[in-house]
Image 1 (cartoon, rainbow, N blue to C red):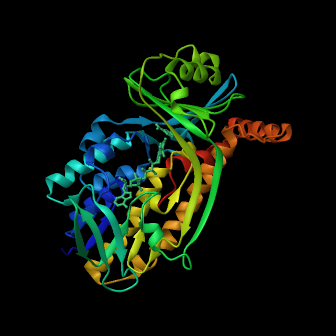
Image 2: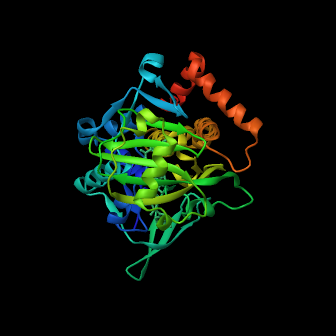
Image 3: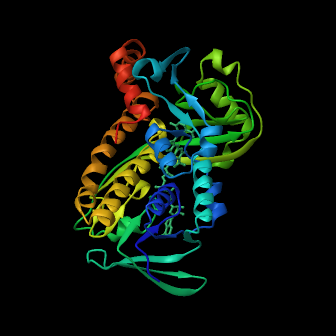
Length: 389
Ligand code: RFL
Ligand code: PHB
């Protein structure tokens, strides 16, 4: 087999890149380790920045999103019984939307089917070979038989546990990592959201987040211990703990119900440099991870896709390598700022096991600065809605 770009990973970054390239007449094959249903069953991000929304439109996959999404003009932050709103619209004239990653992925798979794009599911043993030459190829196994695809470029969109990043030799690659000493326990429930904006809560019992997917579907999180087992968290225990971390005015309005999904995710900051090795380009979680507090994971994956897409189009249309040569540098410049925002919001809102009384006072002062200082709120708003590409 031969194609122009092999995309390893059929998550949102691989699918979005494939769709944008298809619209420019550039052929791709996507290799996905799991089944489509498995990929669509993962409950993940909920907040989309304008940059990603614009790319969905450019990729021609925005009809359902434009109809069903919810525009959020701001977000709420609480600390014990205090709560305040950061109004992005008033502060900087921008907003974000709520539209689940599951729906983004579904729309992209539907579009790929409609244009006849090739996606191979349940591929195993993917190996990226000769990436440092002008003629890379990818080998893998499917249905028990070994296959090979020759290509011009490989896009490594295979998430944090994929093979692409590990293809870059240790002598070339440098990883930067911070693992946080807690996780998030997430619950999806068919209940109306407790508030019309998201509520990020700092409390003495730990962080909590009230989010949503639509007016009948809520997504809630509480900070938990890394060694907690999801089976130790009955629905009753979860709702009780969530209520205790929210201001009374919010907790009193919480509608509870059976969970339809419950999972624990560890929190980590991670960046791999460079994001390019020869003709292999890393995109999204394959190259970097943020703790979800800033809602940046999917959105940083989208900005990588933007830079890589521009570079590949420049290469194929104008025979110009400037865009792909600058890919790593441009993507990383934006990534590190999103890393900083995600790390700072995580530090501001969580309880850490080794926090001293002094640390707690500093955290409180930081939240109060955000509460009462418009310049601090503008900085938060600019970062939350997403820095320009
Ligand atoms: P994905 O989604 O992990 O997709 C990678 C795909 O590659 C496949 N794969 C392979 N395929 C072939 N061969 C191999 N060897 C392979 N190895 C892996 C995998 O099966 C998978 O299908 O990465 P991608 O596309 O870069 O997308 C990244 C986003 O999924 C991620 O950043 C976000 O979900 C993070 N995130 C959030 N991001 C936001 O922007 N806003 C949010 O509100 C937000 N909330 C969240 C989140 C992530 C969370 N968890 C569970 C980590 C909330 C949570 C709880
Ligand atoms: C979500 O809705 O899943 C969500 C929203 C905001 C975050 C993280 C997750 O910061």
